[in-house]
Image 1 (tube, rainbow, N blue to C red):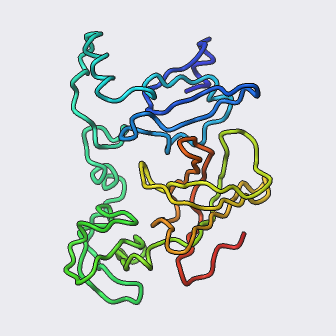
Image 2: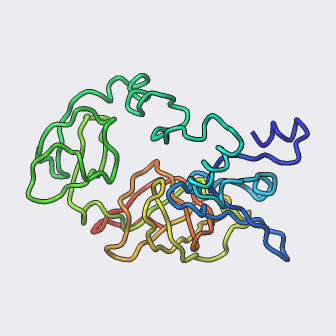
Length: 261
């Protein structure tokens, strides 16, 4: 979209994402920050933006709350001023996320077993599409302790669950890593990380590998790791600033070998 805007001769491109950008002197670097309205913050999905893109983009909603945006929209007479909040992904439309996925993978709605890591059957799920890693509520099983989703095993159509200690992450190997500064760190970075959209941050140490590999190892203090799974985005924060992120390649659980740096 940025490329198309440049081709049209635009001076900048404004989007409706709830994030902030600030140009910092004297180096001229543009930094990406969480939105003022943390309930609407979308910084998690924009960690891949480069310095060139950040300089070209404008995010006018980043310093406003949603009620303030609605007030402005009413003042301009916009018909969407009181439109209901959307709870689905933008490209899904009026369908549910489950319907969207099931159209492409009908098998994800087939019932299957809910099992622990050692294979003990606890119940039956009504389709893997209805569950996500880290989920605790709505599993449909009666147990004396809470269980968390550890894995969606699409090969056996099993929903693998376990207690919190088994679910938490000790370390993560991330691939396709990028930093919003455009500079590859030469040493470990202490920061907060998020592994889901508007997820609670976890303290961690990010150790980048060789720049050519675009990989990093993220290690968490014992007992403080998030519940994460391969394929999720992992985003690095320092306060409200987005430092960068990548894609989770491998997760090491407590008691298991850590990811090799």
